[in-house]
Image (tube, rainbow, N blue to C red; front, side):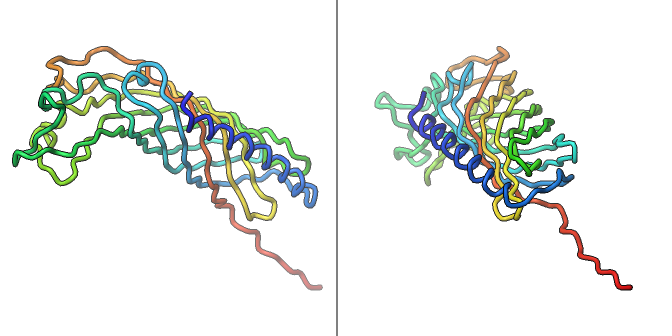
Length: 257
């Protein structure tokens, strides 16, 4: 497993332990009821690829936003969007027809082009799950178990630093970017913390994406062939998010005789 992913998993475990301990202490000060509320979560993640995706890319990062509604019975449903980036591209034969014998790419002016390859992707999902309280006196904090499903697309992005290379500009770049898309499912287990005082609300946990994606380009110009096989792509990693609680504060009412 990648060292950065191992370190992040360790940090997540420590954060979970701290959160559980701190939550138990804070919950003892005030017993509250399970509430119905809407939440917006700003999320980030670190993931290692598996399946066919591991042949093309390395570890990637995700950032995004999600919206959820939690009922008084602690059922949760919502939707979200994640954007995926990564700097480790392992695609065999990539840009080989543009490279010289020394491995360089020459731009339109005859100079060496500084081209880097990066992973890009989009995840659009809807989710459903439930929260299981684990803190006495705080039914809005606990372990969440969710299943998400939706659309997944990924491709190779070429970062060209000040050099013009016609083949890597639209529409010709489509013959090199290896765009693929399809459906995905994602089971997710995490810790959901809602501070009774409303000061610190967050979630953290593990998730695993599995998708069936299909190549969307008719021809790869660098390898002079076409990708036609449906792929099984996967991501496994951790996520963390900062939760914005949208539940309106109750208005104090005073009655006089």
